[in-house]
Amino acid sequence: MNPVSGRSVSPPAHLPSVFQNEKSATAPQTSSNHTSQGPSQEGEAAKQATKPTIQTTIPTAQHIIQFLHRQGSQVDQSTLPPFVNPANRSIESQETRALAYAQTIAARKVLYFPGKTLRREMGQAASQLYKIVTQLSDAQVAALGARLLGSQGLLSGCAPKELVNILNRVKDVEASLSQGRATATDRAAFLEIMSSMGSLYLDPEAKLGVETRTKEQAEDLRNRLTELIKEQGLSPITQDVVNRVRNAGSSSAVGPQKKKERVRPPNDKPPRAGVHDLGDEVDSELGIDQKMRLPKIRWDVAHISTKRVSSHVEPLVGHMSGSLTELLTVWDMLSGHPGKDLYTGVLDAHRNVREQETNPTYMPMEHLSREERNARHARVAGACAMIIGCGYHGAVELAEGVLLYTGQNLRDVISKDEDAAHLLGNGAATELICELLKNYVGEAR
Image 1 (cartoon, rainbow, N blue to C red):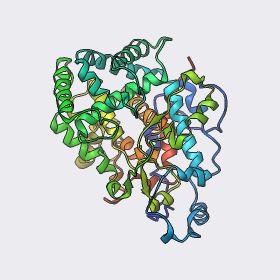
Image 2: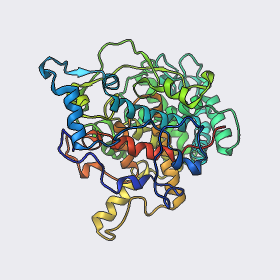
Image 3: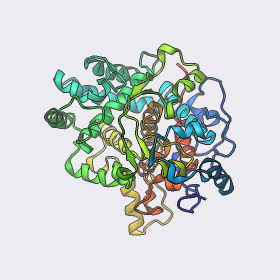
């Protein structure tokens, strides 16, 4: 039971099925203990899920009660600070650390060894984005890469032209599915470029990591991007799209209490990699050469309500996130989807069927072909891989956005003031997201 809400910590029984691709849909999902063997073929990914041994991945009610008793019930709550660095939980709790490790290794494996479907989706989107970015002025490219190229960015110290070089490598290598030069850092940077574009439209007031970009530069960039998107025959991100997507998956929509439960105290922005900075340990386990590893990144440390952090076993990092929504809105656009379907297309189709009561057995994405379902899962897996693999957010902070993108709305089963952690906060989110990620790992190259 969830000690906060009193509900079962497990998701509804049908939730895991939304992550089955064409390879896993006909075979039961299996789990395996963490292994030091190299990544599997994409078709065998489900049999080679990589995660540390967790005694009880989704703890029983008794286990949670005992665990919380060990962690907090013997402490005078009045002496605790109202906010705490959520990464401390991985130091204090083996259960949280195990989940953080499982998420990090699943995500970074996707970035290092993406499967064919994901490489194809990235290559196609990078090809479209390359055509757009190469028509921007140098100043506009720099503005687009303000976060990536800034002091807190993945490409800190690089020149703006490196964004174009990365897009060129991802589109040429990944689209052809050939052996080549694109690295995990290239893939993560490409995904962050899409995230930055999404933020420019959906969260234009965001300042984190983009202090070098003025409001005027952002407006100029947004206007120019819209022109170029139209010239490519793609659907622009209009105000109607912005309003619809924000209502569904913005930071405030998936984290209604986020502003009350998170602060950003002054800090040194320590370099981190992976959830709760477990990236180096994961890379060593995967056998990644030092020069090929994803670099550590600096960004503000968020402190979250002590009560929230202590109420869930799932690792928290920055509270519930709208970053996934921003990235996937742009990825859908670059994949050629019409404006009305950007991000919420499957969710809206599912809602319409339910409201019309024409097909009571309808399942999310039933109207899509197997190829379309697999491509959609690949996109959301890639987005999660970057956000979790770099350490920006944990699985539970992305869970609602993932389910929205695949046609399911947690708002149907949680209250307006709750978030995904209230339902999935004791291990279920890690299970869901790792199940998604493992289907999009390919062979080592």
